Length: 214
Image 1 (cartoon, rainbow, N blue to C red):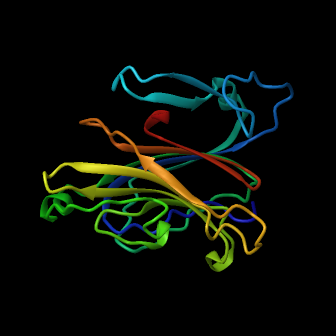
Image 2 (cartoon, helix red, strand yellow):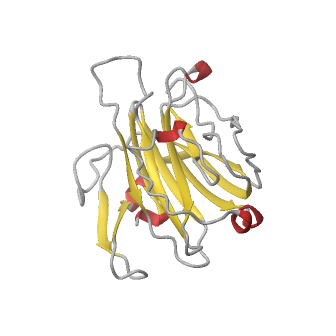
């Protein structure tokens, strides 16, 4: 990875962001396979909080590969802004972040009957009142190539919020023979929970998880 992980521009102000970025070292032994074969293995269990979701989360052995911890706190991301993070160059990263959306902004918004879809609504380029906000990983100078991983929040006519977690590969490469899909879905966010994400980067591979893998 030639550059580190500046957060994707946000279209709403966040009061607080807790970010932890660490490098990863190569394992000296094969990790146990509990999920699919790929960058990593993960555990798959029933979400005890919702009782209706499957939680997929990297196996604990991944944590032992962490080195070079860097922590950022209390970062305010203004609407439409891009905030570079001063991290050492690395080909592997384990990013853990929490976000809080400005409550006054949410209260001021009128609810709308809007159907959002990560793939059909323009990906990270589509701006709304409460999104997108997150990170651009594998970002090259001038963002000629980058992969946004982000939240997009919609306020319905009933005043309730729906949170989408998306990954946009449409600008991940200038090459034409690679997957450039945009994907994601609704992620349940329970009362009192912050928006949280974890992103694992291994060279050109990006794996992302929201709300502890929900």
